[in-house]
Amino acid sequence: MRQFDIRNNPKEVIEAARRGDPVAFECLYKSFFAPIYRYVFLRVKDPVHAEHITQDVFIRIWNAVHTLDEKKSSPLALFYTVARNLVIDHWRKNRNEVVFGKEDILLQTPTTEATPLESAEKRELTETLYKYVND
Image 1 (cartoon, rainbow, N blue to C red):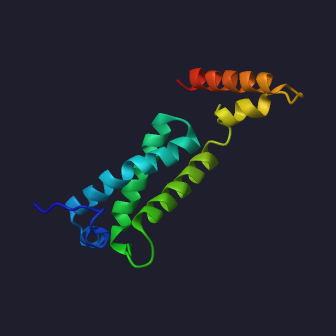
Image 2: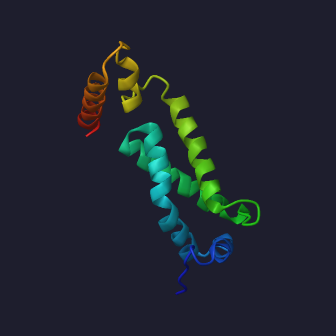
């Protein structure tokens, strides 16, 4: 069984995946799963939805792998594009879903003139609240 290393020869991995080599696609999966999952998770803020969307990204790429062209763009760019589109679809389907994230806490904090010490304490409290809410 042939082993692939995307860091040394990405064009070879892409070409083998285009020909339907499952080992080459596995190499793509192992190389790109973590960054794609992080990208999705930061946008949906739910590990279950993030896993499902990431899985769908790889399924869509597998179904369209024969259309990959290593000369036009990097494969990672294609993975991010598919992920972005699936995240957009997710939010279209779940318009009424409320997600509580760090940005939301910061937006809800009243804006008053504060000393640098008060600002630092407020920032520390916000980060602590964010940590406990999302754990």
